[in-house]
Image (cartoon, rainbow, N blue to C red; front, side):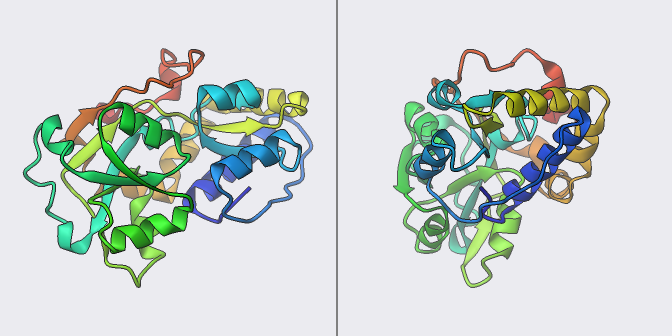
Length: 256
């Protein structure tokens, strides 16, 4: 399932690498569309899709077959804000969590991020469709739209008619790995993908792909990660089998 955004293109590239490493024959048949997460899940579980990519959750890991290799090395859990251009300096004076709790933030209704943010006391305004959140940001329906640090510039560039900008001051950080998920009836495919991913991690192909990706390179140049005010959020829904102790799989922004 692809909606043609940076996540889709990146995830498809890693999937191809994993299958090639595993020596598994494959042919991509990409379903294009902007289905809500619940619709994507339904399609996967009923066999309409073989693979999708999304942030993990316990429910998702119990229903489908997770490939527990974070596609973005956990970078997606480092989130910066898309704001209206009028609000580009709105967060500049923020230096404590109590101040952050005064603001409203936009997210998808069924996204795991929404659950995480609400569990940490944040005020969240939701929409069913991904594209509507940009229109809502443009309409000042909320103060900030948290996005993975690799996402906002391409998303804003894709919507030149909207008055959007990237906040340069704050960053939310939480464990929310972005995985490939495989239909429960495709166990052999899941095994091939997982082994291929680990091979790519161990031989350096994964890191080479990650750090050479134009979007990731742009993040390291533009996001100013080390100089932001960082707020660490708890993820109460983090599945117990998340490989949090496997340092090979996670990015360390202090070493970038």
